[in-house]
Image (cartoon, rainbow, N blue to C red; front, side, top):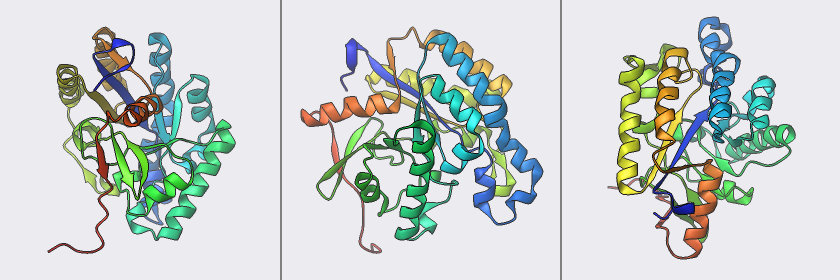
Length: 285
């Protein structure tokens, strides 16, 4: 792909600030589990200030995807993100799984989240990432109806592409479990994730290898991290040290909103891959 200002490739660190919404969405008794709640709260209380200080020092502006419930529950963290000039995208209402919700319920969840984000930030979010990446057949249309310009839930490419949704376009900035910090760092029995926790350097090494590959191909490197996982002390120190070098490698570090705008421009010029949204009408045999 071609990137702005002659950059050889593009890069984005995105954080999903789920906090303890995961616990509450997992079941009606989640609120009773203080240990699990506290693990999620580490994100807005400790990790977010640490991450934002690094971004301030290095002059970086990046993207955060936040459930609407978290915006209302942790306003100081959200205020600090906005004051730093970072982008905030929508990540559901309380990290509910859209695949378990009806179309009407999905619309209701989305509207509640948009209202919470807009009331706090003063603008409606343009980007969306489905909780657990579970974008449904209903959601693309709901997103386009509400003015969203990009999604970051689908995985059909390494680089941005355009989703054709019944003749309308939604820019897709694809994530992947290989660039997500759940596999190396999540150990959360309460929500069914019991990963073998890796040491900081070992767990982060695959992300750095992906960065090298993106540079070689002139593509997009896109990390999906969580404050309460990668934002912990030793892990973030590894990231900080790596960033000192990564920022000199010729990448365009940008928010997903900026990458989506650039991708939309390429699409208008016929220079972006277009794929139909894969909505099957029933089981395939």
